[in-house]
Image (cartoon, rainbow, N blue to C red; front, top):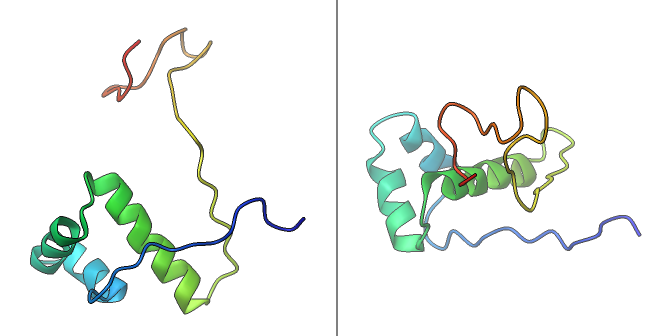
Length: 91
């Protein structure tokens, strides 16, 4: 078994991921339009999907994409329950 899950990229339909990325680093108009029309609920999942496209499709770098199921608060260090300066989980 070489891959536990099939590699499936989100379909960007009429939007070009490279142009979306360029917009993300510039005016953000095209990226905002793509994010809204494609139904992404947050910038994290949207930007992650754009990067997956660029890294996988352009094939310039050997890439393995690892998607952790959840990221939660610390068990020990720096202290139990620590979730960063701006936590995204409820402790």
